[in-house]
Length: 244
Image 1 (cartoon, helix red, strand yellow):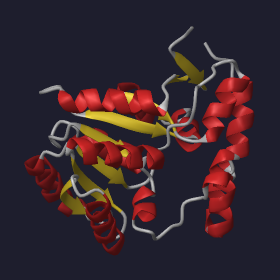
Image 2 (cartoon, rainbow, N blue to C red):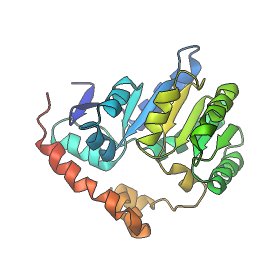
Image 3 (cartoon, one colour):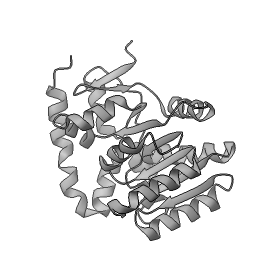
Image 4 (cartoon, rainbow, N blue to C red):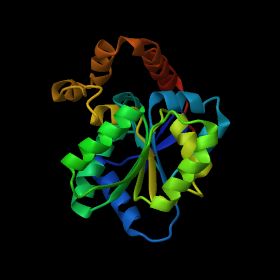
């Protein structure tokens, strides 16, 4: 059986959440291996990669690509790829915090607005007392501020750089500075800090089990409707795409 399932030419490893966590735990335990870039691949990223060669190169160079969203998993199964389950940035972040609380991992938070960033750090410290939040910065920084932010991350040397800048901005930012960040693992988590901070409500478990989390978000955040339009277009194009 192939170790990957291709979606529009992009290879997604067939990893469960538990296998992903084990892989990242092993990376943290290694010394001197350079930054390990985790990309949470959703339909928007897959579609963008069809036209954006730079983004596709970033994906190809990443240490790990996860299936962020039920759309990726369902298309893979309909085409015989059989990805085992989705591994979203939000779910992965919470799992990493749980593991980090046991293993005393350190995190740096980059992204969201200042109030959300501060609240997310506070919630993490209260909920996961053995996790170290070694630094944070909101995501509305100027180009002139970037060098100072990169230096701050470098000096703090976190186990995990959690980047909530939205896709594909987070992926481009991590790739641009990957040789300077001095983090063991960097991962883009979309709007997950909003959920950690309680600014945005996560879909209840029943919605998640029904694979309707996207609908819950749309009902609660109607402004997302333009973004959701990509989902049916992705499904049609991905199903018709002839994998090589």
